[in-house]
Image (cartoon, rainbow, N blue to C red; front, side, top):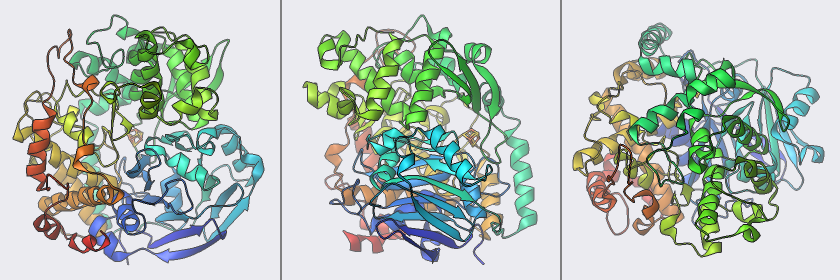
Length: 617
Ligand code: SF4
């Protein structure tokens, strides 16, 4: 009996159009749980620095975690992992919705996709019946169109889907995979799916159930957690306003990026606030499986340009990206840009950041309208968003360059890398490191390039924040200090979130760690203490590090561009910036990594039980 798991993985070879069932690897499961940790252990010995991410040699893993499909709140997400075609490093993007629990109900902890189909295919899973169906007619369809056609074809309106849009088909490097309205956004997993000629997966499950070690204790732990989280202010706000509540909060803290990271104040910020959103766009809430928080927002758009009903509304990151980043105060245009990205299957953070870079270059007169298909990009001109997003998805005109990402745009126009807001080729998400220096560490050492969920230091380390992780040696600290303490706390937070990436729990779900430990122990039949969970998290974080070193990452790649460090002239973080080089030295010392090679010390690898992996290097 494998508690927390079904015990079976579906393995599909698209080159041969065959499938087989494989037992879950117990050694991997015991060391890394499920989700991203399990996937990384599987992929690290099968991919290397020479693997072309868009070739048949890359592997796409879709994994659930042990809590998925159980009554555990906010913990039924699933993850897509691969070698990223965007960063050429660890590719990971997790997604909410209902696909993960349905996959488990169908009898699988995950799916491993290898090879490449000759013609476009989709996969239909109905418990043990698995069909790989060649269907050229779906190619070229948007995500909603694809989903509607598939649900009709299979006569099963309750089935759950994973689809790519035109972005994934056209190998846009930051293409997403969408699951019934929710997106796995970052690192281009949609392009990997597209490169395999795989348009969609549809799943319906009936027979399987996750096995629980101690059902009584598990139920008690869940009850305790629910009572706790529903009494926190953060959850109250998320329930009322969704993540758009972040707009004014981040603005007040100097965390919101304005005019491509250059300003500290913006007179129009109220126009893109949660209050305005609630009054003018909001229809109802939406939730992922088993989530009492329900941070999703369903909206309608009805105007002369655009009509769409009951669609997912923009999240905080998207509002910042298509809003304050380009001085656009028109919330409806942000919602339209969001929906276009969702329909074509494009990551809204990367897409908006690339477009904002174009605005910056245009307004600084480093490019002109002839360079960008005649478009005029005066700050705030939201009308250009729609054609630009479409051009990216279809790789038309300037879109062909933009589809390669910010670094490629900079290279093409001869712009210094210091002016481009990427770390390890991934566009920096919308939390400003000058507002919390821990984010410099987060972005520098996130295994998937700049990522804010790898360690949400901007929330966890603030003295005013209600999240209490002190039992994991993650304390509140001076977030504007270049200290060893800040580094240590951020590193510990990374380890804790790495544990989340294997469970897979939502980062908005923050019960006291001891409650979470009770829940995991009762599910898996473990008797781990908090220190054991800390080691598990560090092991999961470290294997992703090893994956990146195997792909060719070196310490020299870990840089932060000046555009993110230049002190602002106004606002609450005026004059502040992290000394990231100093923080980086402290980080290497804290992690016991070799400063020349970037490798963890032998002693550390031994401690984490990862020494056997050195065999693959
Ligand atoms: S908080 Fe939001 S994103 Fe997280 S699981 Fe709940 S509904 Fe999904």
